[in-house]
Length: 471
Ligand code: ARG
Image (cartoon, rainbow, N blue to C red):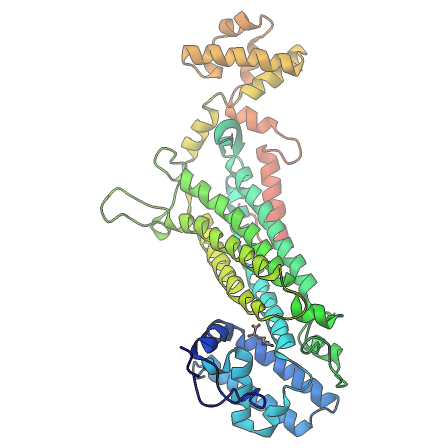
C-alpha cells in the first residue's frame, strides 16, 4: 500500500518531486473515474482559453492552431470511446492536457499558461451544470404539458379532495393535476434563477489570485456563453454555491415528483382503484399472479432520497473550508452528477405515467360524494339562505352529519323532516347544494375547483407551453 505506484513523479509537477505517490494516495486522490463526465466542457474551455491566449499574444498563432486541432482530435477519440483515461493523471484536466502534449509536443505545454486546475474545474463544472439545467428544463416543460393536457381532459371530473388524507371537499381531477403544473413551473423558475446567477466565468482566476499575464477575461467569458467574468478570483475558485443551488432546486423538484408518485401509488392500490397504470408502467409479481405493481412511481418516490442526500453531502463538504480551493471540493461532482441523472429519470418516468394512467371516473365521482364531502356546502347554504353566522352553521351541520351517520345515510338522502328536527328553517332548497356536481360548480373563486376555472387554467398553461388544448 505504501509502495510508490511508479518510479517517476507526476510529469505535471515532477520538478519538485522525485518519486511517485503511494498506491493509496493515487487512489484517493484520483477523480478521473467520475470527472471524465466533464470532458466536453473541459475541451471547450481549453479551446476558448487558447484562442484568448493567442489573441493577447501570450502564445503564437501556430501554437494555438496546434492546440485547437489537437483538442478537436482528442474530443473525437473520447466520443468514440477510444481514449485511454489513466488514474495516474488524476483528473480529466490532466488526462486531456497530457494527451495533448503527447500529440503536439511543446505547444501543448503552453496551454496551461495563466490558468490553474482550480479555475479550470470551476469553469468546467459551471458549464456542465448549466448544460444540465437546460436539459432538465426541457423535461420539466414536457411533464407540465402532459399534466396540463390531462387536466384539460378531466377539468370537470369530480374526485374527493383530501386533507389529512381524509375526504374533505369534492374537487376535480383536472384541478388536482394542475396543482402539480404550478409546482413544476416554480421548479423550472428555481432552476432558471440558479442558472442566471451561476452564469459568470471563473476562467482566468487562475489558482486563487488571478494572473500577471495580460489575459482577456471578457473574451473567454463571451466565448463560453457566460454573461461576464467573475469579479473575485478567490470566490471564483472556491465557491460551489452554484452546485448547491442546483441541488436545492433539484431536491425540491424531486420532492414534488415524489408526492405525485405517492398519489399514483395510493390511487392505483386495490382499495382505491382511482386510476390504473398500463403494462408499460407496472410490473408483476413472481409469486402473486394478481399483482400489478407501480414500481416506476415507487422508484420516483425513492430517488428523491439520493437527490436530497446529494444536497446535504455537498453542504457538509463545503461548510468548513477556508478560502480558497481545497481538495475537499473534488467531492462536489458525484452528488451533482448522481442527482442530475436521478432527476432526469424521475421526470421522464412521471411524464410517461402522466400520459399513461387511466382514471376510473365513475369511482372517483362516487367517492367524491362519500364521507359527507358536501357538509361545507350545507353549512355555506345555512349562512347564505338563513343568514346564520358561520360558526352556528358549522355546529348545525355537524349535528346533521351525526344524524345522517346514525341513519346510515348520505347527507343528500337525509329526509327534510330529519333536517328540520335540527333546524326548523331548513327548506327543500337545501338539496340543490348537496350534490357533488353543484359543490364543485359553486367553487368559482379565483383558483378554485369549478370546472370552468379548471378548463381555463388548463388552457392558459397549454397556451403558455405552446401546446394545443385538446378538443
Ligand atoms: N480534480 C480537481 C477537482 O475536481 C481539480 C482541481 C485540482 N486542483 C488542485 N490544485 N489540486 O477539484
